[in-house]
Length: 264
Image 1 (cartoon, one colour):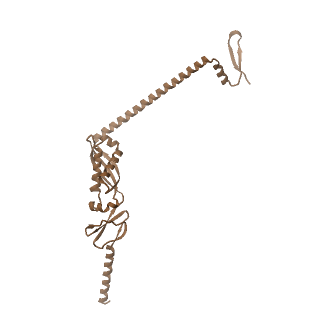
Image 2 (spheres, one colour):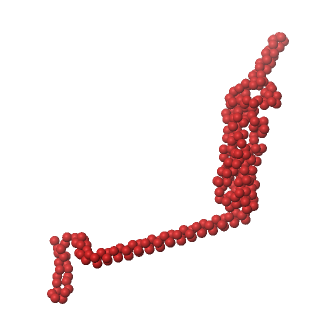
Image 3 (cartoon, one colour):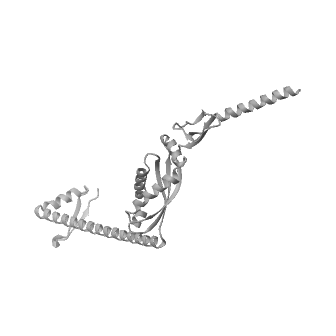
């Protein structure tokens, strides 16, 4: 192959390579669950790119993906209770970035607002809520503490982010405070058990009294009925008779009678 032909092949190869590079730098792909922020020579576009394939200005525009999926991260907060007890709360925050805040979040927080925005606001909300409760109540009412802290955190963060939920994983107290709360809870359980036993005994006693009164009243009513109606005894005998006539054997004038049933 002569040098002229070789030069043509090299030129064609270089042109093809340049075309491939140009095509690659002019397109982008945003993965599912993300949106693309377009940055052209340091300037952020106010319109984000949806997921999938797209085109951009080659070489001068970068496309940076930002997740809009729900994310979960851990944080903690050192709080004080109303009785001035130090409490450390470990929790997980479930949040997501709404589409209409993608560009602003990228500009203000480089696309990851957790450390700069979410964690401080959640910790602040927890401190305000726990400051109104004793250490014992914080331990007992974890779900209520979580709910109130979640409401306050949403107010503090505003519409920039969506805080889906807070999950309190652990509430750490000093060993002395834990022992004191545990001892108090045991005492409360024992007191509740004793009260239950006392109430049960009172119910049983009242039941026995009511039963005895009922039996006494029944006897009184029957006695009065017999006095007023002597024939009532004979009526009851007739009602309970099984249809077999008794045999009465007398002993003359002695007054002693023996009643024997007659066989059929």
